[in-house]
Length: 330
Ligand code: SAM
Ligand code: SF4
Image 1 (cartoon, protein in one colour):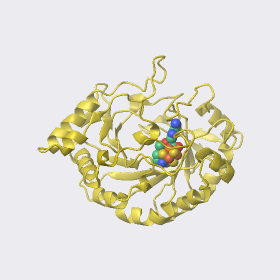
Image 2 (cartoon, helix red, strand yellow; image 1 turned 120 degrees about the horizontal axis):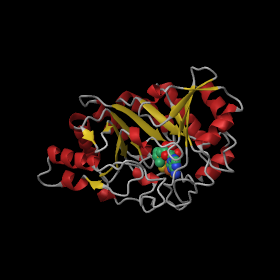
Image 3 (cartoon, protein in one colour; image 1 turned 90 degrees about the horizontal axis):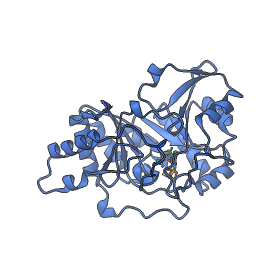
Image 4 (tube, protein in one colour; image 1 turned 90 degrees about the vertical axis):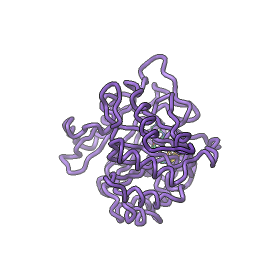
């Protein structure tokens, strides 16, 4: 089991498959991109599957989410999913993606064993999409979403970040669109994880702002805390249900005490938190001549034992981690 000194148990593993991306969302990456991880440092498909096997068979991981960067840019993605689906016990598997290219791969991913997707989309307006992501690919994302729903990668969730002055007036329109298309919308508060260090607490759109805006058009009924469990999204029934909307308020209503996550970067580092400033190397143990699963499991458990109580966001001494969101795996 992966357990920490506060008694939290990690059952949910986030695996970053690449730090590269074909968009440049302003809250995530600078226009010119970043210094990408060097190829030899990236875990191979075999190494990723081995780590997931260890996590599932020896460490109590029940759910695996593939992310990045943009995970659809990883050539071996379908094969990785297929091999993980053959593990016993079989983990639940999902993917967080910007949706570009999903039209082509949704069916193959479903057939390989992927259960669900989260697609990120911040706006219904193509011009705003271009400003926010610095790429003219709005239509591709909409097509990717439809393909995911048609392939049965359901419930399809849509992740939305609202940025002041850009798309913060769109919350009700986005919810109406999501309800109509049978997507579950989840707003994520902007976090200080952008490579440019441009985040400002004063300017950010809070969960409170989002709910106020949604309530101008919808009746929202909060779901009980049992339903929330360790899921970071607080959820509301929309106009009595069955559709729901979620808000992930990592900044203003953190959920660290119920966190059940552990993270693996594309270059084989364990991170116990998005905001961790320390990482634990698994790649060296993976590539050692006498590499043993037991040793890797031991290192992973030790990393988990050192997990901090919270993100530290509210601490005046808070320091943004060196790795940006795209290289951690959001
Ligand atoms: N490229 C994929 C995507 O965009 O879905 C997966 C990686 S991305 C880092 C994962 C999620 O993190 C996306 O939903 C994105 O909107 C969100 N994200 C990125 N930077 C963020 C930030 N600074 N604050 C809050 N969410 C952020
Ligand atoms: Fe790429 Fe996702 Fe970051 Fe946007 S949020 S730049 S799609 S990694």
